[in-house]
Image (cartoon, rainbow, N blue to C red):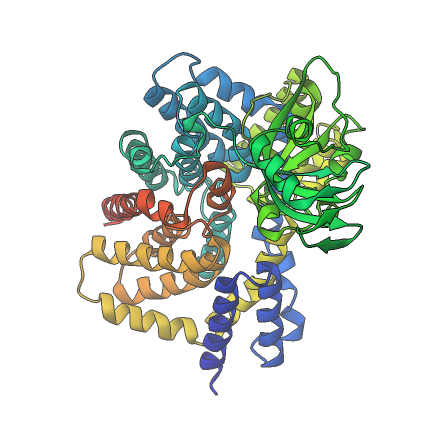
Length: 573
């Protein structure tokens, strides 16, 4: 088998694994790298060259700086000042989406969503609408904003690295800003005027005035109870019995229940009211803190809680907070809460003092859905972080310093000045993304070196030959977008960047126009919840179905591709 065929076969296998969602994306990337090593497509000395790539270093440094801005409370304070407290729903939504897009231009777009998601829920609640009316538009807005600067998303840095390798110089910090801003303006206008109206308001959403479903455990008191009688009592109290456990074993919900048996219950009410009515008890104490509240949160990607048990919340909050209920995943799996481990996207119901909830949510990277308690802004620290951030951008734009060097220096300075808690330095980096990047870079290089990229580019050039520039750019953007549905945008950029440059040479169009078309397409998966982490994060809290993304996202995709193609054809025609 020829090297080009081998490379194509390995990438196809990686694509199948990426789509299956059964294997972690970073592990898929390493498996693809090992396959390239075994087949000789990547030399052993180049296997770990991706870890030294400036784009990978820049991504890690940007994540540290962005986390410092997030924890400082400065971005949240700005968001609250810009969004009017009393205004019509449409105006507040427009301001929210604009803030989300602006934040995501200069920090990780997941962090931008973390900051603005509680505001989105509050806007929906005050307008007596479902949270679904604001959360998906906000997720899309933060993705759009990431297209406008070099650091808006890791894919932008990867394509800049591709340009430096192939054309001798990277992108400037604002090279993509003209097309990115044009696409973002068109996208935000659509989301504000039309998009949110296309989302169905389902019964059971917050708009119907009912609390969301929650899952918790109740304990059989010191007596013997009939299981059928307990089920009837629970129904009368507003609950539903999901499973029963005796010790570590699951038991049938028939016959008699014994003292200390644990019952997994689904309800819209809290466990203390349901337990009192049903003759059951909760082993969680009711605190008497005057300002204690219960908030529903979603666990973001990169949260330090992922993989840990629910008791870790109590430990990390110095016994101030506790998980009193959890979301729908446990209802599907029907396992004891002690056996469950927190996953990205999980919903937790956390109870405790308001001040402690605010600081914990920021540090644990959980997104408050039902209550907004902003992180207090430490003005001195926030000013220092913003000054360092601005200096890094000034060095890139004014002095021509590489993003990797500028933001690494910024991250080191933030750490040296203790502007970010020491434990947050390494925690702020999403290591799965770093590993994915570092492993996929040699794989992508092998796709190019083996000749597979040239063959694909020739085929693409043959198909697009004779078409006007606007059609060529629209096609490149669309192909990239469709690939990003199955891959994440980083892997898509690694594959499509060299291919776009080769195709541009065959079609005699500007390679920058082709690369920017790929840049827009790589971050434009508005059709599925799996194409971007922000889409997935709002799926549960917004009560969305898989098809809802295409319902609102399909017109947005058409608008984005058309706007990008027209703008780039004007700029580079």
